[in-house]
Length: 158
Image 1 (cartoon, rainbow, N blue to C red):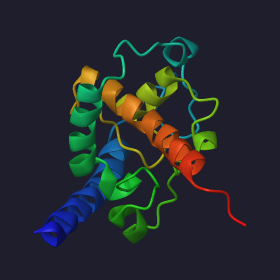
Image 2 (cartoon, one colour):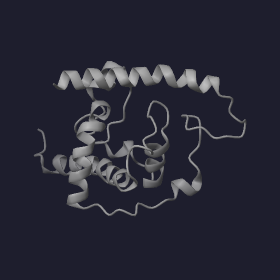
Image 3 (cartoon, rainbow, N blue to C red):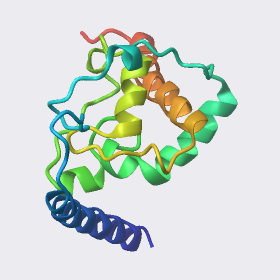
Image 4 (spheres, helix red, strand yellow):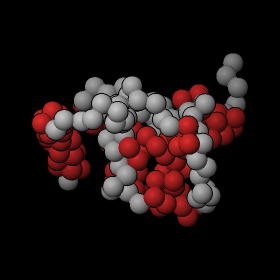
């Protein structure tokens, strides 16, 4: 069952990757429009947005369930960036367990990328409710906190 879902996900992602450029090339874009490419800058007002959803165990549990089925295929079960689909498509993903991968990134920036897409990350704004997107930001932040606690609990290597 998992293989079927993985195959279907890969097929749908590959299909959309083929169709989207064809659709975009057929439409002429105004020169002053901003697209969500890796070259575009995140507007300062978006980067400054504060997360209105506090990190709670209930919110994290809900985000974890969603993440498991919708995000882990690329970002990995524990945020290590080693999901099956990312490996298959040869995508370079960030390891969110490493706090430096999110250092200097505001919640507003992460929310903007999740909502509008950037680089290989597709826009999720129209398919994920706003509160869930903020909970996913909280979950993403929790990956590095969890890993830091585990490292602190480990006895020193000799």
